[in-house]
Image (cartoon, rainbow, N blue to C red; front, side, top):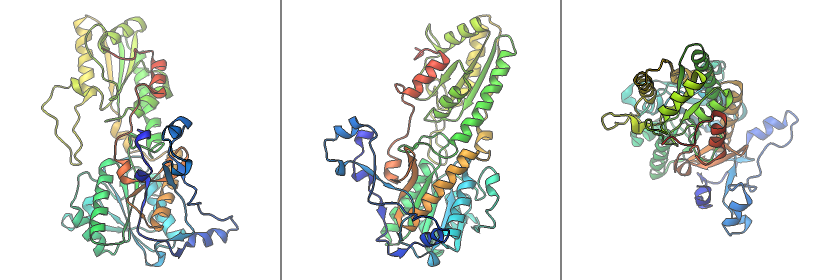
Length: 443
C-alpha cells in the first residue's frame, strides 16, 4: 500500500497563511529554554526503505513526504479570540480523558485560549433536539480526569446531519473542533469540513485517531492500544491457569479486533502461554483432517490442556445467522465467534468421547473502560499537544499521529482509505506462529 501513496495524497489543507506570532515561543523562552518550533520545510519521507523510495524513480525532493507535527512560529488563529469545541465519539478506549485533559491544558495554559466547550455524547451533542448540554472545559475541571476510564464528555455511535452540526459551530462561534474517534468519526469530520467549506467558514477540524484495534493506517500505534494489550494478557494468564488446573482444560479468550488481529497477536507474544491464535486476516477451517478442531483435540490429548485466543472478527464465515445488519455507525454487526467456538469445541470433544473443561473469557468491555497506563497517558498528552499546534496553525481535515517515532499530520481522506491489517506474510504473524507452534493455516 505504501507504494500507492503519492505526494498529492499527503498535502494538508490549511485555512490560510499564518500571520499571528505564537504565544508558545514567549511562554517557553521565559523559562530559558531553546527555541521551540518545528522546521516546516524539513518534511518527513513517507517511504522507509531505499527500495521503496528508489522504485518511484523521482528526485528526492519529489518523494512523498509528511508535514511534521509540532508548534509553529506563526499561527493562524488569534488565541484571545479563539473558541474551541471537543467531541468524543464511538466506543470507549483507554486514554480518552487523558486526551481531553491535555487538549484543555495546552490550549489554556500555553496558547491562552479562554473558551473551550465539550459536546456531550458524541456528534449528537451538537444537535439541539437531543437536549445534551454543552460543557465548559477549564483547567480546574479536567485536572484529575485522567485517573478515570471512559470519557467525561460521554460518547455515542451513529452519524448526524453535518448541516446541523455546522449550524452548532456557527451558533457557538467555534473556530476549532477537535474530534476524537475512529474510522466512522473521521468520516463524520470530513463531512463537517465539506459543509464548512461550502459555507465559506474558517473553522479548523483536527482529529485525534482512536481505535483500540490499532487499525488506522499510516501511524505506528493508536492510543489505548498499549493499555488494552496489557489488560488482555491478564485474561490470557487466567485462561492458562484455568486450563492447566482441570483435565482436558481449554482456556478460550475472545479479544477485540473486528478487522485486525493486532491485540490478539501482541497479547499472545507477551504471555507465551497460547497454543492457537485466530484472527480475521487468516481464514481457518473448523472441521476436516487439518481443521482447527482436529489440531485442538490432538494438542489437548498430548499436553492435557490448551489455550486459544480469538479476535472478535475472526471466523465470521462459520457463523450461521441471518444476513448481518449494521450498528448505528454503519459497521457490520459481527456474530459472536467466541461463543460459537465454545459450542463447537464441546460438541467435537463429546462426539469423540473426550473429557473437556472449557473456560470462556470475554474481557472486551472491561478492557475498554480502564484508565490508560503510563505509556498511553504520555502518548495521549503528546498527541493532544500535536493536535493543538496543528489546529492553531490553521490545519484542517487532518489527523495527528506518530509515524516511525515522529509526530506528523495525516490528511483525513488518506487515513480512511483502508484499514491497517496484520500481514499473514509479515514478521508479526510469523512470530505468532513460532510462539504458538500452530500450523500456518487450518484447511
